Amino acid sequence: MRSNLKKLNNNQIKAVVDLDQKDLQKYLDKAEGILGQDVEVKGFRKGKAPKDLLKKHIGQEGARSLALEIAVEQSLSEVIKNNSLDVLNTSNLSVEKNDSVQLRYSVVLDLFPEVNLVDLAGIKIKRKDAGVVEEKEINDALGAIRNARAKFVDRAEDEAAENGDRVEVDFEVKKDGQAIEGGISKNHPLIIGGRNFIPGFEDQLVGMKKGESRSFSLVAPVDYFHKDIAGKRLNFEVKMNDIKKVITPEINDDFAKTVGRFSDLNELKKSVKEGLAQEKILKENQKLRLEILDSIIQRSKIEVPENLLDNQLDIMVSDFDQTLHEKGMELGLYLAKIGKTQEELKNDWKKDAERQVKISLVLRQVAKDLHIEASQEEIEEAAGKLIQSAMLREGAEQAEIDPLKIKEKVAAGIVNEKTLEYIESRCAV
Image (cartoon, rainbow, N blue to C red; front, top):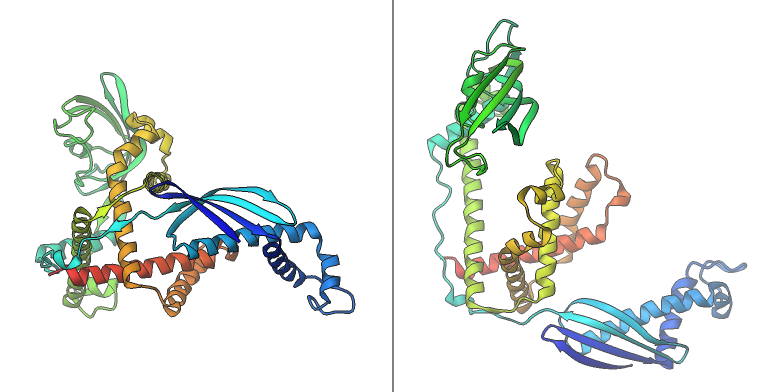
């Protein structure tokens, strides 16, 4: 085997590989051996017939096709290893010659960029106090639990809506005689007093009876988040469709017992406090790690290739599209609403995408320098839990689950966590 490497730019190399007849025969033998394992010849066990007989049953075209795949995969792997190339991706594979005596192919290798890391010993980020929970936070959490266990009771036909009631309304909002964006809704549920609408809207619902319609006008606050209507007079048409009184349980020892295995309210409060403390510690730790990584990025020399940046932007758009789908929206409609193209959206996100790529490169370089790896036992244990969870998920079929991809994702996650733990141990004070 012979190979020639030509540098295209700082992060790309074109490799041209030549394999002679001796090389090709080796790969052809491998291909025939693989295909022969499933061949049945009368008088012999599957795959156990003499080589000459197996060849007759395999088919030369299939063997040559598989041999080509094996030849390219294994020879390219050897070229990469022999030249100590840090390959990110391969593209533009071109078979330039392929016969019984020679195979020549070329391929473009995208390389990971060089990352010159700052000495981690010189970075010190102060760890902030976390986990302190105020009494108000506990009470707010208990209130949220109580509200989740609320019961809704129909009000009598002649009863009017009161503050705190759950109602369903049809509404239409117009500005200058035209319906505003998102200003029409049917059977819209809300709690009067929840303050989730333009100030004054929910106050107008108080006193309305089921089936009643009402018209009124309000002026949106000048600092309203929806800039198109901020400070503008809006006209509302509302119809009351349903009114329910909200009955919430009293927060006491009996309530605590309905929430879980708590003997009294104090035990529930203790559990809530511990949960809130853990959540605060987790958030503060995530913030600390990002501060450390940002400091490393600022003091290190990291080149971000266009292909890596473009790939990250594609991932971000895909994730955003998925989020919109979960909310019943379409990316195209969203872009039309904000008056931007997908390329303009990517341009807005470019700075954040570059930061995310740099963080990934820093973590990868630290893991590489320290030989941080995930053990087979760690991968099997974590992947097993994920696979089991996926199989138990409603509607999931075994054919939809790819164990290899799950293990690859799990392994990457374990290595990342180990690397972050190391960086935190060196840089947090």
